[in-house]
Image (tube, rainbow, N blue to C red; front, top):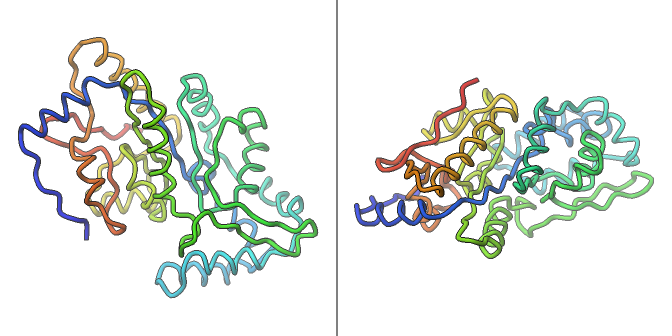
Length: 302
């Protein structure tokens, strides 16, 4: 169960809102990869065509869901089932993967407006980089920071071995990676700006990273959105990255008008810092939420 959050006093709320209202927010985007930027899962495409096969993969996925085995242990079995050279394995991904139709234009928007965009994934970095290089071109791909596990892949394909970012059952603790990025951003922010962490995902496995975000985007109709609805978690549903771009444009416009002295209400969660102190590994995501003194993030209309 989420840790209980004590109510803020009127003085605390006023102080937090005043402090937020005096600062411009530096938007930093983090996005899941499989099922979010691309409609399919890169690992699943490989396992089904060149590894353990779809039936065994589904059994292994169920073992993760039930807690019978850890994500790291199951993943090592899946990657270990591959015996195909990297280039040969990539051919099936190139034919199968579909990119979100509006991701390219969204990423160009991020580049043009100096909004850092990061991929955060439990997958393997060499695969993700190759996919981005192919679908976006190397120049635009190079603008995306990938936070994922590394890998040792034999030239003849006889061994696919993940090199895990973290020494735990997850292999990659996405929440820790976002925490580290927030700390780095806080140190580099200038002129009174503060980081505004955006997370974009599709599945419940994204919750550890989403919990570290200020704004959460959940792909409409998939498990993350369902979970948010079931548990009354504030989020912005999206169909394509065009919806996300519209919402970020609105946030940026709001900041510009705020700093211009128009005194508009700020979509700011006054409980965010308090939530960060008390949230646990089982807590729900920390996202922009409705508060009596703040304007909540409204869902994007499809």
